[in-house]
Length: 126
Image (cartoon, rainbow, N blue to C red; front, side, top):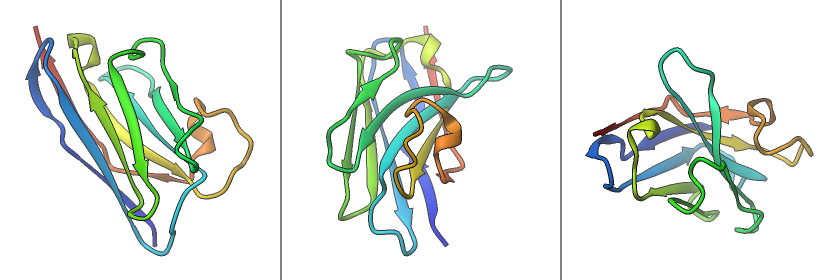
């Protein structure tokens, strides 16, 4: 079965950087779309960034645009989120999500994705 596992979370001061990675295991070679979502305590899960199978079609949430960079390696079934200029508002559990085939659903909809990782905690102190 396909599994996604995030890593790279931790505690960082405001203005600092972290790099999150998501590794996929199983029989799936590549995915139509891979994305990052995040969820703070008591809040809804929100879209962060997405990247298509062709390493293009990249979109970011307005709140992270210019600060976060998403990338992927289809041969390794991995996706990375480089987070710079972190703010306390970025504190959340970050989840990796993958779509097996192109459903045509909007990239920012959690319902588009077939697989989810367990999440990794990112805490940004002021």
